[in-house]
Length: 59
Image (cartoon, rainbow, N blue to C red; front, side, top):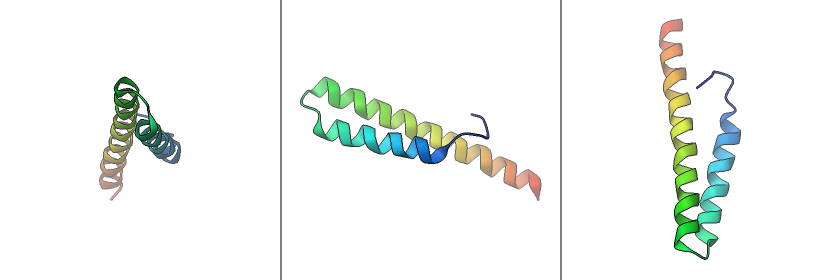
């Protein structure tokens, strides 16, 4: 995960995926969108962990 990651974009995509999962007509579609949302969530978490490590080193 690079430090130039746009977290707002990832959070936006996560929300869109959750909305689409909620409105999906099929179980497969719902599962696919939920998987995407989880993937975005993991990327946001990875970004947060990286930034926490970097801020500790800066002090």
